[in-house]
Length: 405
Ligand code: ADP
Ligand code: ASP
Ligand code: MG
Image (cartoon, rainbow, N blue to C red; front, side, top):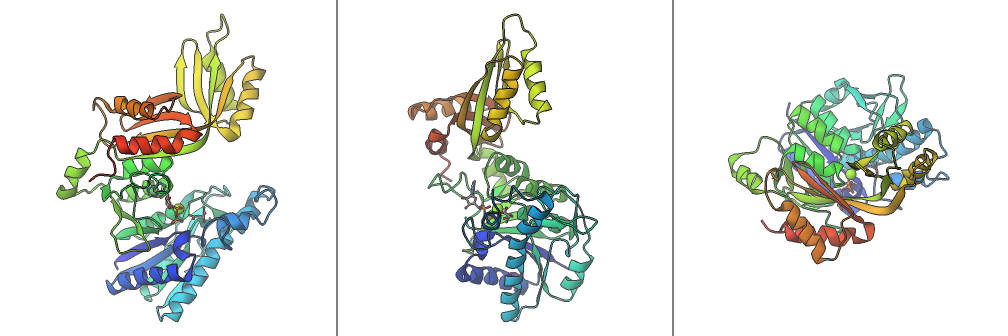
């Protein structure tokens, strides 16, 4: 049996016109003799009637006042509505279909409500329906615990449902359909001339996703990589091929991949930079600071340690707690909030001279102050004020000519 998993994101299902495109992709792949598992997200985006954020807004404090189990029950509704709606559409088009919740599709998770991990997928039910030649529609973003409670996998988790099902079912490929033409060199909402990448490796995309490129969930990419399943990210609204994510890169594509020092740029907003100076005579500032952050479960990033102190970042929502923890142990931290972490991501920038120089050049030309920087063999990060984020991304995108090729 040749199995294909197709995942349709929220905007792909939000209007009846959009759903006609979805129907077209399903028909085309059935004609190619694939057995289809179709994973769906909740319809639309914040403000649309059944979108995940809209469901959360039904509860005071956007769902925070609910116990986590009940919050997951509410969150799960969006995908259920979507799956049933698509099932009706397929039946009306004489395409046999069944809609299953994550739990009914055998997606078994631990009991960490709101960020559950998939433990196992019991594929019998899905396989039985596929053998009966039905399109099996599965609600994304959810599973169930051994005791039958509905869990959700964390925001953006429908991508993870899709690749996990693909891995468990030994699918030939997982196609992620969304509202853009693949994985682009930058978020097209910010950089207008961002260009789709035709083929990329899993590690690069996983890195890009972790660093803020929201087009695909990093966990979904990890699962596809482990299972060695090719992943295609493409637009629902066209027949373009989008981006193929694979490590089996053929000779034609290999040249393009080798040639590329910088693959793309991404950003994360909502970051606070904290600077702590050592008090006179104190030599254990770093130890004290980072032990205190760990004790309070505050996640830290962008760490620079010097003999005179430490500079690091936390999320804005943790900043006031971080500052008061430091004050309680006798420090006078300086906190700069509203920063953005900009990442220049590459596959092959290791040992390539001049990349940092070009980054500094691009930002200096726009008079954008760099608050901090760090690098690894695949990425260079710079911290800037959020108000400069968009200009910084555009300047870096232009400096590395990412709109070309
Ligand atoms: P879906 O509902 O289909 O899962 P998402 O909103 O999760 O859609 O992801 C698609 C969005 O990701 C795009 O509309 C785009 O604005 C954003 N995005 C951010 N970075 C990138 C990138 N590098 N390439 C493509 N899209 C990106
Ligand atoms: N609907 C969920 C969310 O908005 C899951 C997803 O879209 O992947 O986070
Ligand atoms: Mg998404």
